[in-house]
Length: 184
Image 1 (cartoon, rainbow, N blue to C red):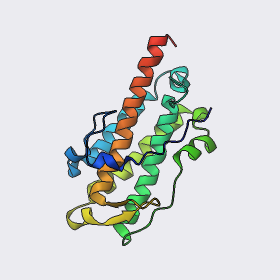
Image 2: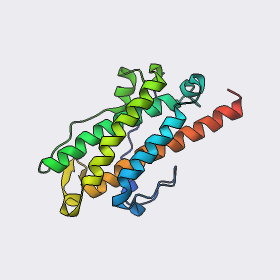
Image 3: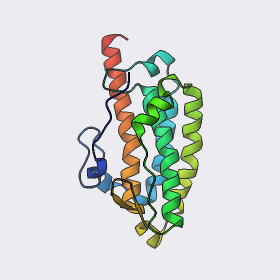
Image 4: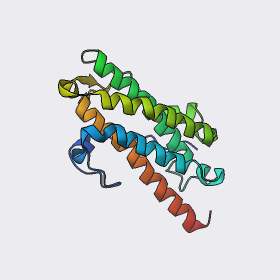
């Protein structure tokens, strides 16, 4: 069953801590974003090593399974690396729209192979981490524009981006706790 689309504008995480996961984007040290990407990808490897039934069971009708969240994170890594590359090589690029909910349905996130997803997360995280680690000086102030009108600098883009995979690890941990309580 498809999840109801998330229509929140999550850019508010740049201004205050996320009440759902505790992440505070304002506290992120920009020179650590690359390592944060690598560390997060390593945590997803541990998640995806769990038994398939744990990975594919949704904790509730309105929450993705751990596998679906992992597929989303994989796609976010790929997409945001492309967007970061645009910001670093083009002046004020506009980003194509991406409907994360449509991607989940069209790509059948719930049916994917966890081992392949784990490998893809690992493969996507390295180049993105390297790209963030290559940023210095005035490049942090280069800009890019999302299709909904939100404008980012590389600085705010880094802070906004890293919240997503961190937040979803919390979503997954909570989902596993719910499933354990139910004995699923």
